[in-house]
Image (cartoon, rainbow, N blue to C red; front, side, top):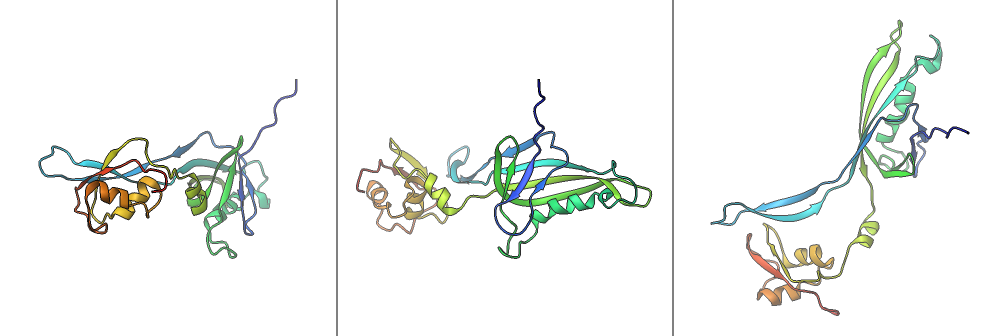
Length: 218
């Protein structure tokens, strides 16, 4: 029976001149974090503020990589662990063609995530007698990258299947709320009619709005 081939994590830039990197040792684990932002709307007389969904935040991938070159003989060029560490660090540097760090695909057992390297932390933990680093611990933070077209393509532009309410926060307008709910800022009129609002650009913070079902053609 043939043993399965060890798959190594590979970082592949999707554009530009930064070369791909296959890591020397796979990470022991990685974490993908997703969070949302909520605004707290204080209403006089209530025990606690109302939570109003504002937006989703970018998914973030974090993991550690070990660069170890102790297998190479002293004096060998490959013994300097900074060569590999700098190749990974290049993903956080500005690409001359894009004038921004490259968008990368992280491949390991399939496509883990496509994103931009937000941070690279290097911890030098072992040196040979001449002071050349032979072991470096890398900690990477990566944010998922999606274009506006991709995000709008996944937005559910249909109305909710039932009437519900939202609480206006400071700076809110009916077009902004219509975009959050329906995916279309021009669909503010049904909300204005439902709540008998004359000026869609002026909303008092804390106003409770009834959001109607959006009928076809509205």
